[in-house]
Image 1 (cartoon, rainbow, N blue to C red):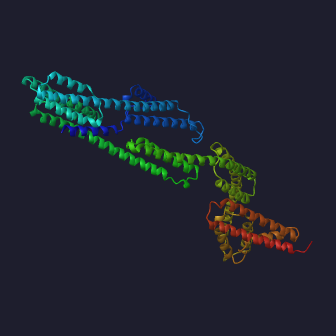
Image 2 (cartoon, one colour):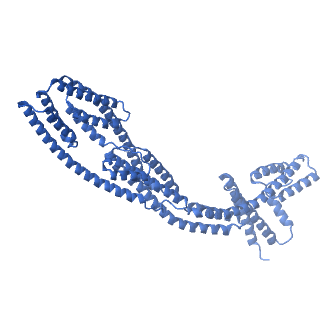
Length: 577
């Protein structure tokens, strides 16, 4: 039974060696200090702690490098141009780790030699013990000789782990045989059993208290020492052996069960950490680099990657056998991303030089056009330059504001001058509309069924005034003209309502002095001026009105062009003067 529990404890000890223990260190300097302690006492160098120290060191090293990058970027550089400084502690860290590995290897080799030698010595003691038992069977043996063998056995500590159970079982068997056959005084024998029983009861009580220890791992380690003490304590009376052993076994089982549960919880958490880290690796490896074609898309994706890196830091350790492998996968995915980003920004930096040259040329073209008064044609050219600007890629940040202000300044200057010009025209059109409304109001005062000669003269005078008034706002042009035509039609042809303005102009031209060619030329120039006014209006309102509104103006322009062409044909058909 004791051998069974002993083997169970040995297995638990092996498992415990695989657990990753977090060490209370937070800086690289503390890691170096702890490694120096281990170099001074190599027994302190446990595998789990070394692995933890390594991860803490490189985590802090990476954090320090990220701070250097942030400071470099804040100073006007870019992350891609940053070259990390050589960390003086990293070389010291590597040297100490190499020394520890060498010392651990040497210590293990020396320990194995000592264990083999101790094993040989214990076999010699067993041989002596066996001889003592044979002597006791035949002629009796002094108890002092037994005590000497017992003390020598206790003084020998380290033996190969796979030999502990076998040695202890044989020694216990010899000890019980010795007590059973030795003709000792009953009082002396009972006294020895009683002292051993007291010692084993104390060991059981200590083991039972360990079941309540909040530090499960430390309790398990203490239990291993109690097992050694229990084995080294001498035998008890036959009737008490089973009882005391069962009590100690029950206490050991309680401690072992808590330790096993703790270990299973650690394993479960570590597996969850591995799953989470695997998902992060898959997200990093699944980045669609073909879609990252702009600064903004790369910067947005960089924020996502940095968020994943932060999440990675917050996740605990994965199982020891997977921890390094998953970290290497993660590191490779991150390195790939930032390497590709660096190549993109390097190429973009080259392209931005060409973009600056293109945008400078666009600025020069806009500046050459900004003083033009050909509102329509120049407006179209400015709009085309703006389109080219939008299609041209970005420039370096230090040039962005200046080059944009230069370009938009030239464009805005042109639009401001055009708006000032068209604003005065709008005021003129509003005044014309008020004058035409006044004429319509006066025409409504006449009785179309009873017109005197004075009335007719007055109506014709108002018609002449109407034809002399210039343009009104385009949106009311048709309505005001229809209202006027309806009134004039009601007067029974006193004045022709259709084509009033053009008839009046022709009558006016006929009354003017000059040759027919001169009169027609004045008409032709007036038509061209009217066409120009409409075209300027189209340039102003094309971006603010619906297509139907613009189409109506364009139709008017085409009609006026046809009239101008007709006048030009009349001029060309006149005989030479």
